[in-house]
Length: 386
Image (cartoon, rainbow, N blue to C red; front, side, top):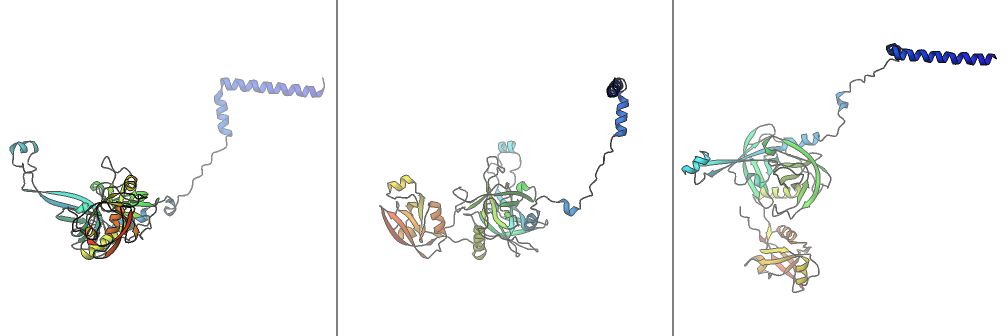
């Protein structure tokens, strides 16, 4: 046998003996192998990172600066109204079922809402429905101070009201955002006192602009947002990511009474215009011609011989009003006001309301297929009934 064959035989026998020994140890004494592994294993190195400084820990996006800028300008509004007790309060059977809660001659009803400080001399902007019929108004400021306020004036047709603090401590008025600066998709914060739980900030985006035909107010140009607005938020500010006022929270669409992600706010351009008129004169003056109108449908347009459904149908004319004096009749179709085309009945109402009472304006109408121009002396829009 050659030396090469002998060497290979020795190697094969050695490997066989080693494997047999490993099998015996693994079967009879496995703990020996475990101890061997622990001795020969490399030590685990745990890296401990240094503590991150507090200034570097906060890397999340935050709207805290916007909230901090606006919060000092937000107030809670508490109202009360004295009303007569129930007419059956003295009836024994009535008292048996309802107790003595109707026993006093008069009772007080309370309500709450929110508002926003708009000037250092104590003017506050809020919703009309927050203070409607109230005979006492109390304001709670951001720092907890409470003071009385009086009503300066209100505009029920836009649901806005202006209050003034009886005694004004140092105040921080809110900053108004530039008109028409808001875009769909912008982040907004709604601030107020929902359900009386205290000052609350909710966030969302602008879902839509120029919302109208909702049946909420006479004059509508709402911002739609999904920022949560709940009872008690009414009259509070809707602010942008800079903390600047872009709207006054007014209404929600809800089937449960709580927020469903569809809220409406009066845009700052409209709110500021109404506010300035109220502060200056105590009321809002609008143009009026004394007509009843309805939208012009394609069917109505065809029946009146009008090619387009743009315009508003004059359904009625008030006797002795500016429209009748100018020669306007029921059945006329209003096409333009002061040179501006009329889209529909709501658009016509807003265009006429923007005209100054006492001025003469040209109205373009369609009558029996012919286009006529009438000169109308604009009257003053009557105050709505409460």
